[in-house]
Length: 423
Image (cartoon, rainbow, N blue to C red; front, side, top):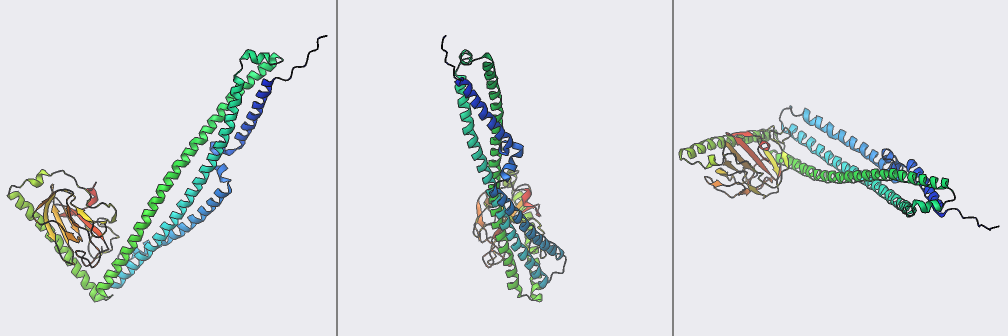
């Protein structure tokens, strides 16, 4: 009788079963692991102890921010309520004191908001790292899975059939292969979804970093605002020694000075336009529609046109915008035109007035130096002077909030909002 040795189990079938076992494990892991379920992704990262700690810190930080915001809002109500009170030295100093205190709290608010965004960045960084680690681990497992699948695919159907004891085993193996490919497709789709979520996290991180930089800039601006408000209070104290009679005299003097400057600008512009027209000078009309540019590199407006928060509004209206500029910053003509006035008042209020086409004119105030002469043409962008505004320096005048450029744009002599004309 022929002695037949029993054939060992198909090596190929053993390999497929190994793949199936791995697939079942991987599938179970995927369905139970929130890192692969996009809808539950936050739940997975939320269970991380470090992320939970950051979340708790964020809650405490938000509570601190809300408390400071209440203080800022309380000062705002107080400041608003005092705007209709009589203009006395005591009211003025109290109002400036409230503004200073409010600004100090605004600085604290910005500092706390910076802490909050730093915590958010740390949280997002952690979520990104968890996803990257999970994706790397799963890629390695899937790569091994595909390698085994590839090895199985190297045999032809005839070879697989001959390697099995029965056709049923071959049929089962074929079905296994089809199931494996389908499940692998699902796994890869889920992995792709997680990668997409990771990209979203990276985008969120970039936005948070931009927000952080903006908050830092705002903090710097608010700190400068505080310095300016302290300067205003010191200027008034120095001018009045907190004496009511001196304060009221200062009001009369400043209001008269502003009214005189305004009347001079209007009258002179009217005279010059008439004179140029009578001479047949069509230079201005040829510049019609030229448009304007910003006079200094900064575009940070510290006080707006008729700004209700302008420190000296109760003395006179603010017919301009104040642009933050360091002392001595070169001032560029916002448009080509004709120099109507180059007024050097020593330590008083110095300014430059230029008339343009289309009934427009520009005024540059608190200038510390003048580099043009009256009755000459200038071209757009030409340096006409230097910014000023630091108390006690040439051109600053008696009342100033610190270094800046005072810019007026007028239409037919009447001040209009410069922001409506600047790009």
